[in-house]
Each structure stands twice: as C-alpha cells, then as structure tokens.
Image (cartoon, helix red, strand yellow):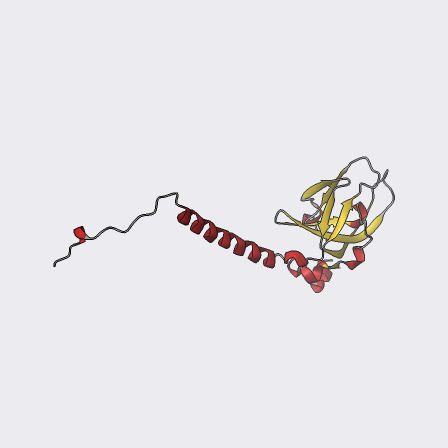
Amino acid sequence: MVYSRAMERPPERQPFFSRERFTGRFWHRAGALGLAAVLTAAACGGDDDKGVTAIFDDAGGGSRTIEVYPGVSESVADKRYNHTYEDDEDIEVDCQVKGRRVNSVTGEEERSDETWVHIFEEGEHRFATAVYLRFPDDNLDTLDDCRELYPELFLPEDEIAQAA
C-alpha cells in the first residue's frame, strides 16, 4: 500500500491554554528567575553580608536633612552630595573608612569625626559621615575597612600624597 502525507493523521495540537503548556512555561521561567536571583545574590555578597544598622541623627540642628557624598576625600567632586536622608531614617552600612574631617555646624551638638561609612543603594555608592549617625548596637568598630572591600573607589595612598 502506498502511504501519502495526506493519509497520515496530523499530530494532536495542544490548546493554547492547556495545563501542560502553562505549567511547562511557568516552571521554565520560574527556574530561570530563580537562577538569576541566586547569581545576583552571589555577585552582591548574598545574605552573609556583614552589615550594620545606622540611624541618621541631625545633631539637634535646624535641618532634619542629612547629605551623603560619593567619596571621602577633600576633592570638589567628593564634597558635592549625591543623596539626602532624613533624621531618624535607618540604613544598612557595610564598611568604614577614614576620610576628610567633618565638624558639626553652629547650633548643633558639638561633634567632629573623620570616620565615614559606606552605603550602597539604588546602584550608587554613598558615604555618610559618622558625625550625623548613631549606631544603636554601638558596633561601628566591627565594620571592615572600605579600602579593602571597594579598592576601586579609592586612590592608592601614594597618589593621595602626591595630590596633597
């Protein structure tokens, strides 16, 4: 007997909204999203980050807004703020570094410090001075040095000496 394509029964097609089609796509996409989340967490340090909670403190001054900066040096670029926070707003910080000395202004509680902490939010590196922060668990000293965690954000020490 001669067979032709016309005589063959076409394969059964699944309806567009079939359970098999939906669950197959769902699990495929869920798996891809899960893998992306795991890779993102691994690239960003995951859940084992050694963060510390800090609370912004306006030092009793007139303005409740605290400015944070892209760097800690004496350069003009590092002295232009790149974000603001409000008094009593809490944040997660991941390291500390010594930088330019900051003094509280007239009318505020007298404070002076050269310690800065690093904040990474919204894809942006920010540094806040310890003058306008309080640490509820008194654990600022447990933070790692930012120069070790983020060397790309800092000039080598010999370049800093030459620039001064």
